[in-house]
Image 1 (cartoon, rainbow, N blue to C red):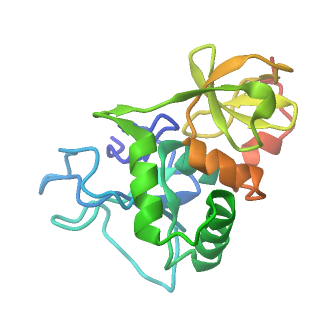
Image 2: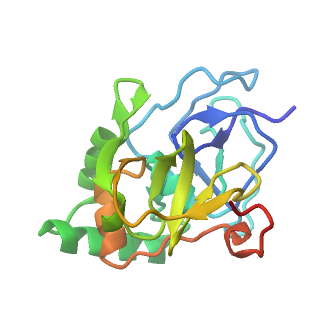
Length: 208
């Protein structure tokens, strides 16, 4: 049975077989029996690479941070995570520079984490917002027919833990439920292109 450590675009932590392309953490979320007991411990939600400087970890080691896994970077952003400043230092610096350019001041990492924390949760639930789909950049996640779907070019692609599934044409306009935190959407608009799982670009018979 897979462990409960896969993260959906809704920010939920679930037990599914797909590992994905990225790892991250929100602090210590599991007990000594590797059971999830909380959804977050800290405001610092980060997204990391799977391999860094040859380090090896036993997943869900007692009293150590809980390794979380994302399909890709766009999924991690949708859930409210930002690039790790250690293992993804170049991405972190680019993200922080674009953030500061968007919001008119040089932001500290603590300030970024505080803003994102307010945008990703409403109590214990995922905080979402509304936006016209015509204004949203590539990499933003929206809810389409009840399913989390990423915007890329002229299409929407439905998320799954193993890769992108059903494709549909992106509507020219209309209000949608936006999953990606608004501040991150602004950073996308400023030029940050999130990494996407290669299944999005595969020739697909699953298209709508």
